Length: 324
Length: 263
Image (tube, rainbow over all chains, first blue to last red; front, top):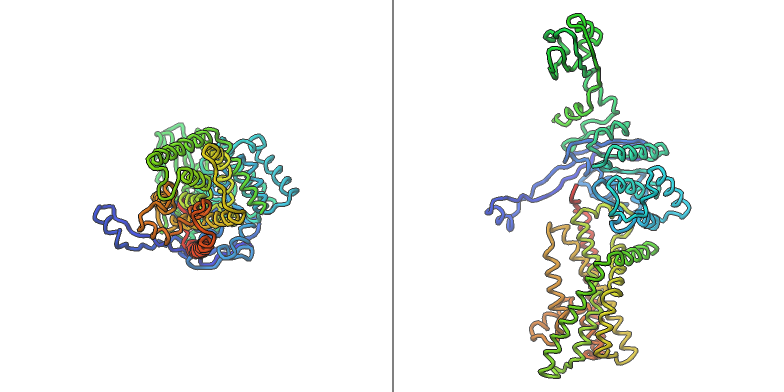
């Protein structure tokens, strides 16, 4: 087991401030502390080579978890052991073995070309020349950034910069890489390139833990999903299991030659009545089988066209987020 | 050590990248020096000696203080507080290096570049025109540089300590003004402390500011005896001890309460 997290808690203390003038003045002298329970006892284990997605709405505690796991924050309670280290205690030794990309914070240096920043990392992590050259060339080729690593960072586009951030985070060949919203604000092509890169590295045995709001990241990358909400773990399993939580539901859109009758059978929920001939609905196949449904509609109205879709992962996530 | 040099080199070279920055700074240093010299010239035309100070003493004081201005290591503390405020300190904490020495080497590189570009050329001209006074003996020179070095360390710890304030305070823009005022007044940045009223002089002895560059400059100009200077060096060491201990203590406390701003 590479990562084990046990009953992790984090309480932030902050102070209440009023916005009325009187309250603002009062807060200069007397401040009322407010305790925010960001994490209420989260536990999970992650094996070597896993690719785990962390999901949760804003303020759910996923960033806090990630910051504790990377040794930036001290937790209020609980145990964490990653490759035998306790991140916040053995910080310097530990962080030499991990990498991290924070979508909103840059490790590159604004005024200096990425390649110089890479050399800086070579010094920071004392990477041997040979290894450094080889790793860098390999990654530069994979991400197709050869033409731009010599330009000043400030002249790069967000997508180009992000690719360089990945190289920066992985030059020292970390065993675990933490990604905090790595594809935020990127276009489809850049996203795709970065996802391919992550999958490629994962094949070589690197463990990835990523948080994201972009569910397509999860669909393309993660075999396992941990959903956090209100500081608690609400789901931890494969993406397929997450899907099946909705039951065997399908999204069906059907158009017919003759007007449709009122579809009031159990297991059918109309989501969108487009016209008398055209409707979108949700079918629970546990209640009403697909072939029965098709036969029924065909008999009453003659099907012209029919499309069956998996329910969108967004729907499931929304349901999970709303559960208390 | 390799990292230290690599960072120093990078920030040194970085300064040369911005032509506009270099020329504007060079100009502003020139104007500043011109104004100061004109002011003292005007004052000294009335009396040629004021409180045992000649015009040449004054110009030398001004030039030395100017030349040593960049030994005041404000950079590391400033960089630190910026990093706390914009949250990039998170990045520093996930990389296996000593943040303090990295920031230190960056500032040294930058100050070195700034010294060569703006400060050194301007004051060399000034001293060539007005004449440079020399220290009494090689020993004096050695003691002078020792005092300068101590001053560098004091200023580094002072600014670094202040730079950690954003861990506790949400806004710290005013701290820079306080520092600027303190160094101008109690560090003798514009007017030598020996011209001050008694009260201010007394206060200045209880603060670290005069030990950064002022004491070294007055010694260079022969206003402090070698024996008295030993006392100054000792006081500098005491300040270094106090500030370094405080810095270590505050950093330890800060790590426990770190909050990363901006997600």
